[in-house]
Amino acid sequence: MFHEFPEVWIQMVADKTKLNKFIEKSATEWGAALGVLLTFAGDRLGLFKAMAGAGPLTPEELARKTGTHPRIMREWLAAQAAGGIVTYNANSGTYVLPEEHAVALIDENSPAYIAGGYQLITGLFKDEEKIIEAFKTGKGLGWGDHHHYLFQSTERFFKPNYIANLTSSWIPALDAVEAKLKNGGAKVADVGCGHGASTILMAKAYPSSQIVGFDFHRPSIEWARQEAEKEGLKNITFEVAGSTDYPGDDYDLVTFFDCFHDMGNPAGAAKHVLQTLKKNGSWMIVEPFANDKVEDNLNPLGRLSYSVSTVVCVPSSLSENGPALGAQAGEARTRDIVMEAGFSKFRRATQTPFNLVFEAKP
Image 1: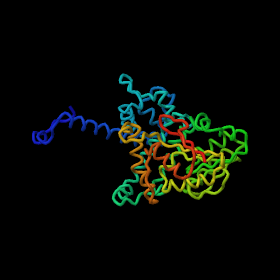
Image 2: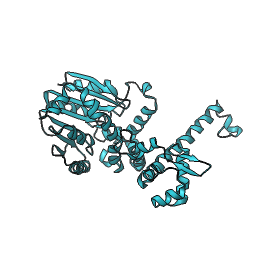
Image 3: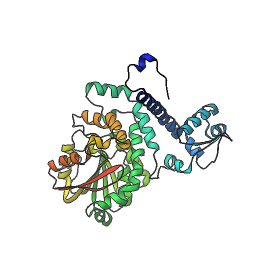
Image 4: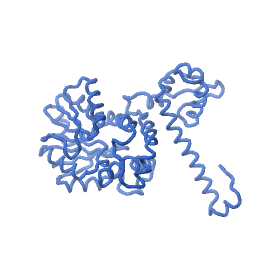
């Protein structure tokens, strides 16, 4: 039992055991919340990179390798061991980062890379006052008004999923799109591209097609341009533009990755896509996995999506007087908006445990 209650408290609750379980759960939540901050600290300080492949290390050895304080390393390692991030050998007083955990925490090109999630959540806590104000006023919180960690971590969080799926399974699941991209001459608009991770992956995979990334957030576009330049890509450009007014027409493919539900005017965006697509073009909409009913989303993934949506996605749309679809919008609501915009076909092309991939045709 986690806690013994005074008699006066016992009289206030119907089920003492149930109350104790809830308090125990809360203690677990507190530890997990602090664990996010501590794991991100390890990411920033290079602690996991120093531990990867190094075998058993004492706190003092890790401190010497990383230029950190040994007493704080002792406490940090104990916390990480309690959270299951590292393992502890009581006989030797040493800690090990398991190989499988290292892949997830330090290899940015691995499909299993998850370090961005720790940065994302840490950054959201920095927006506490803005979030509280959004709760009270309903005026929302614009994407660009968040702490800059959000923009960096969004790329780090989503990019591994795009590496794993975008060109290997998502695009091949679309109707005759892959052949167009491979054969050359195809035009692609990646709308809401952020730092350009998805745009750059497509440009590298289909060098004879022209890819342009659009986003209304200028700092993200500037970042994306720098990344494309580092890659030496010649078939890619980035422009500052929104989802309802991006330039160009006759696109063979328009893509929206994990952004449709955030938009202030998703219906207007859908109509604009229809105007800019070729008659035989495709619109690929990648959204977080969601069932259509709340009760079917009450699981760990749904919890994460609803939580991020509460402080990012819904306020973002509300800041533009939008419908606030939320990250768990689901297939039915997405289909309704797309079909009402004038598209003739909408289907679920494929899915992963984390995403739904839709294709719409004019």
